[in-house]
Image (cartoon, rainbow, N blue to C red; front, side, top):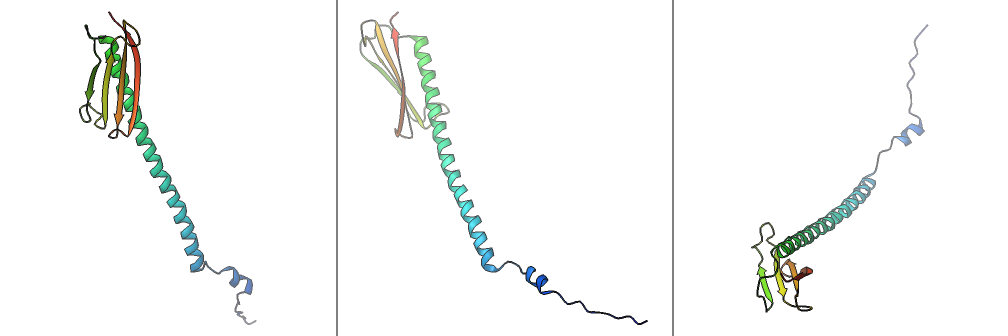
Length: 139
């Protein structure tokens, strides 16, 4: 008995299925991934800007509330007959260099014995503003 060695030939189906990706397919896939990543990068910038604006607005409201609490605790200065206005300029409020705070107390407004107190907050050099308003009774 003799050994017979047969050489196996690849079938045409195997050769066809073993084709790789073409350079064009790879470039297109990379372009799609790149565009998706650029979309996420754009969203990230918008989200960061929104968070930053929200932080500044929240800080402004907290600072206004703190000042209003001080005014309520201290009351209207005795003998006040003309409007009193005090401003804490940009860079003078601890922890809030981008904010400016103005307190205005208008005596006997809207009626005798009742005084209007307004705390106005500005930030980003006046680009944004908010305020709180309350009424105080004379002692």
